[in-house]
Length: 138
Image (cartoon, rainbow, N blue to C red):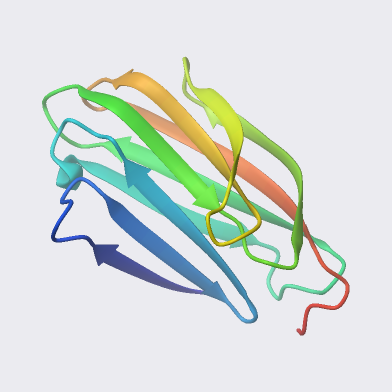
């Protein structure tokens, strides 16, 4: 798995994390945050490796607030790769998070986890399960 973090110089509170998994690409977007974006960290992991066409793929997203000031209007959105079908999503740890399935502007879908206030030193983790299309190349 390769992970690429792309800062947006025009919108410093928007960060895009792109994960390359062979023919599958998922991305995470952290948006709307009123605290400094460098105070929030996101990690994205996947299992199983290798990814096999027709099987389930589980993404785990972890968020850590490293800053000393509460962050407000936090939204973490995972846009899932093409050739996948959403199976399940949930908040694994952390309280007060809202969830929603949203359309991906490029086609497909995304899962959004949002919260009005993330306190200093707070952590949360989320899970998104997709089924890989049977025609997806290995």
